[in-house]
Image (cartoon, one colour):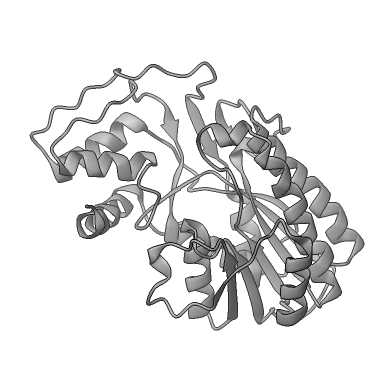
Length: 310
């Protein structure tokens, strides 16, 4: 690392009302950091009662970002915010604004004392690879979302280097857990099964690497605390399981007598059948390893959905 300094104490988390950003902000508060959270105006219900310092800041407005950073002067930024992460928006022009917003955080932050920047990237930067993916794989994104993440990484890395800001980029695979978007796979399966309905599914033979939300937040905090982390790292559980097995595990807990029907939804033309991250580089640099196995994490997610599901 370029800067041999003590751990940063004043921390800004972007997207702090989102699934990952909220978990990171809570973990940082528990670790004793002075945490500032920013995000969209329409912050979700999870912020209520969290005692989180949160403000609505438009990251696409450079003047608004500068005014905020000049006032708060964070020593470190964890950048979880991103616009257009699902559905057709992944291939729409909205992705371009994310690149400039990410770059602005480093450029403006450096003027006001920023020393460390951690960006949350995506496995989508790699594109169509089958099997276990290491950071040495050459990125070849298939979506505008993946391309924008890769562009944000490349440009921000260069600016951080020029401005003497320590820089890490964590390519996130799939996360799950209490508080996840109800439209994503695991919570949608849980909610359907709670109503004793067999959810429409593909054949389910594709293997996915799912990381529990608390483990993801701990990995990011370990990255923040480390003086040995620089560059790009995969952030995942390091193992993959067939979607069919995940669905069956959920069914066995929620509705054991429910017959699941696989193959009612066709695979898309660019379906990847084995997506798994190699996390040895991140583990070696930080000492972090996932603590929550998938079955335990699914149980926690089920219990949460029983409380919040309509």
